[in-house]
Length: 350
Image 1 (cartoon, helix red, strand yellow):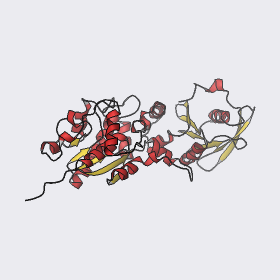
Image 2 (cartoon, helix red, strand yellow):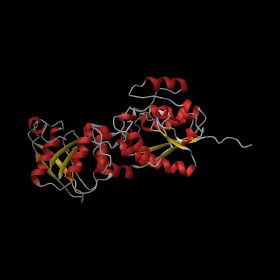
Image 3 (cartoon, one colour):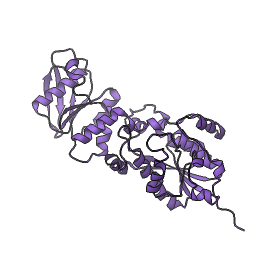
């Protein structure tokens, strides 16, 4: 007599409460869990890590998936899918959400990647922490079947937190996974999840994953759509990462100015100087600026310098020196009058 096969699952683990609960719940009912985490390049916490200063104490949320996997006691595999994800962001078949978030296509991409891992490891299902009705775009009754079908996971996609509202997976039909031990959570309320976390002994220290993606942020979305509208080439990850740093000013069809808002952003902007024009006021305390997209003419140089000078401690002076460093290694200094707030606010800001 042979022992009954133990079920196994690949679980998408973001580090948020719902995905942690999905992994912990499956483990508690005897499912062998392997967690996977996908990095899209648009995570706010990972951006803060990339732009951190030496010896800076980082929030544990930037590596929430690793921390949660360790707490639950499951192995974690991490993958960088930023290149593939950027293609989805630039041309999402199912469109954007409220801002520039392609949530349905994001989910399909991750599940396709997870399906490959499932097939390679011989796991029975791919599982997620999705809850019916929690997210307005991707977690709806009409979008769940679309995501399951287009990810190639028909019958093999398990959503443990709302499984009792879903069609049975093949693993449930065969009795490999006990459907009665899965949940029937719906809606945006977090009470059932919090109670389940207490039952499973999980600590309340999860990343707020719904607010982790830059693409859901209205301010970032404006910059992203502006960049798309004014670019005559495919955007790169460097382009979209630069959108995460500083104040952005649209000064012309092919002219942008980016200015650091604080010391850490001035440091971060130095990563993007190559191939662009760097600006600073050498005799005044203030930010670093980058001229992007084109080589400005003298009038445009003066406008960029005047805006940069506005953000220095010499903003009330009649004349401020601005040093420009060009990609070919040359440089020049110009004198400008700091732009007044009335001439700046609401006119160029993105």
